[in-house]
Image (cartoon, rainbow, N blue to C red):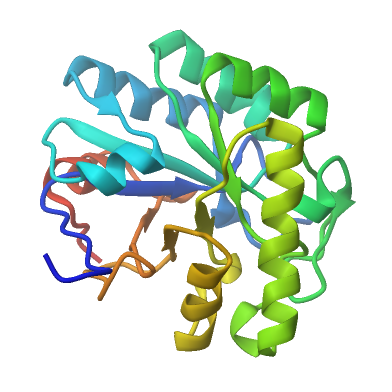
Length: 238
C-alpha cells in the first residue's frame, strides 16, 4: 500500500459532540443527541454484535466487518454524565478528542457559531474514563481553525496539546481530530511532523490518506434508520 494511505472498506467511523438535552438558547442544537437516542444506537450495535475499535486498531485493521469506531469531539462534560454510563452499560469504548488547553473550563470558542457556554470534562473525570478504557486523543490546544494558522502557530497548537495530554494520561498521543473538521496540506504536514500518525476530519466520503480520515456525524435530528444505514452500509441518504 502507498505510504500514508489508509484502506477502509467496511469499518465506519462515527462522531458525536454532546449527549444531553439542548437548552432553548442553544443555536447549534444538531450537535446534541439525546441520551435516549444514544442508548438506541448502542443497543442496536450490541444486538448486531458490533465491536468498538480504538484509533490505533482502526488504523491498522480498519476493514473489519461488525466493527465501529465511535468518537466524540471537544470533550464536553455531558460525555461523562450521559454517554459514559451508557457505554459501560453496553460494554463499549469510544475515543474522545480533547481540547487540551481548555480541560475543566466552561467555554464558548471565539471561532464557533455556538456562543452558549458549555462545560468541558475535568481531569478527574477524564482519568476515571481512561481507567475504564475510554481513549483520549488530541483536538488541538485551543480549538482554532488550523488552516488559518502559520506553520509556527500550528506547531505550538498541535505539539503543546500533545505534550499536555501525554503528561496527564501517561500514554502516547498519536491521533488528531481537526477542530471544525477543516485542514489543508500544511496542517497535515505539521501534524505528521509533530508525531501524529493519523488525523480525522468531519467530512464524509473517501479521504486521500491517513490524515484525511472521514467520519459521519450523528446529529439531533437523525433517525435510528439513518444511524443503521451508516453503520451497516457506510452511507446515509440526504
